[in-house]
Amino acid sequence: MSHTQPRLRIKPLDIKLGLRKQACDAIKRAIMEMDIYRRAEDIRLDERQLGEDLGVSRTPIREALSVLEQEGFVRSIPRRGIIVVRKTKREIVEMITVWAAIEGMAARLAARAAPAKEIAALTRLMDAFDADPSGHLTEYSDANMEFHRAIIRLGGIELMSRLTDTLFIHMRAVRAVTITQDNRAQRSVADHRAIIAALGAGDPDLAEKRVREHTLGLAAHVERHGDFIDAPADLEPEPQAVAASTAADRIKGYRNNIVQGELA
Image (cartoon, rainbow, N blue to C red; front, top):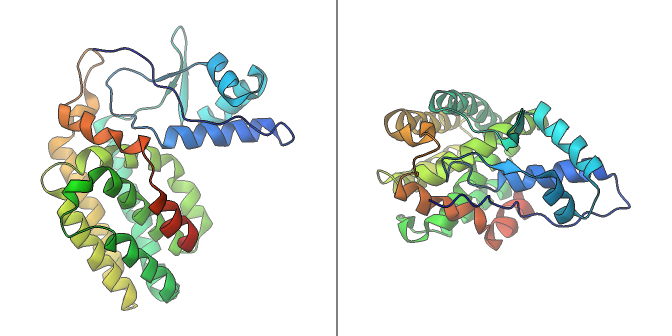
């Protein structure tokens, strides 16, 4: 089993801007793109390496990591250093339940007020895939999470997006693994189209119901099949989970063109 620590995908900072905030944002984005459940052992962050990668001294790195610890992204452990926070299976199920509540309310609000062109953009996001996207699971895993984040944005309440930022790290990583299991990719596409139909019809009750049931279905799946989340550090993750987890390393251009450009 390889113990090589993964490197965050980050670029040097612009020294003319506030370094602490830039460092915080860069490290946060990199963590959010990682598959933190790909490996059973801890993911440690090295201040020196982060400083070199970002092109700054260790002072703004330490300050940024302190902020990220307060926000729940990392944890400082004596004699072990800074590690990326991983949740237990029980915590993941609870987080999915909270996400379902927030996203369900966002869908209710979106059904009442979201412009037709933004709902159409969700349709195009799904149109990039067949009814069975199993041949493109890496790309679909990314599109899947962008779909759910877009629903929250369409709710029109910025606080909802901020509250789900920390949840997103774990939701995205767990979805990247579970999307390969139990025909969930095919059912996900069908559920998403049903959600879009409810939004397009301007039906708040139905939109909320379909989003909530879809997300709680993931919670039930993790309850049944999520033992890999609590795997001890001396065990390899399931091969299926390792294969799926490469999604974070290849963020595709369609996401920026379809989602960020039209739903932001």
